[in-house]
Image: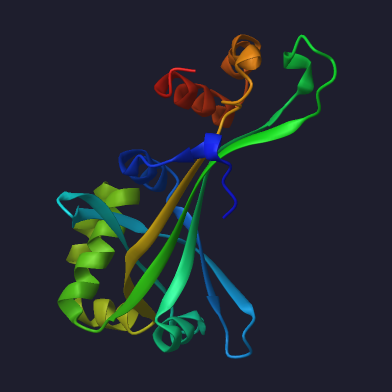
Length: 207
């Protein structure tokens, strides 16, 4: 994705935090006609190591009726996009009236290598992690269901692991307009949940 230098972040920890907090992702592959094919889905972020440093990978699944899993299998690679908090930014925050509106946002984009999950133990682990991300209290109920029911549900999905080969993190927060930060903070502090989250990231970046 397009990332001006002032908005680029090499902080893998920040990217992991964004992916976990905004885990409903956009998965993009090419279909058999070479056209982009998109699925919106929750993904679990696992953290291992690469070159001795923390590095994420992703786990998820799609419905077997969704042809996307075949494109993942046949292409072997894909693109995953996570959109974090975002909000309209009014030009009225500037003392200089010669300004225009913009949109501030945080995003992570990953190029991934795909591995489909065929072993039952891997499928169980993937589902447990997704449930634990979103409703930990449901885990006990899920595990108490009959093996016959589990098998039927498993047959209706295709699971996968996405190895991240390239990660880009974009933090667009008006870093290049320090004269706006005081007024921007005031506006964000009384705004929506997304706007308050952007303010938290401004604090984190000491803006």
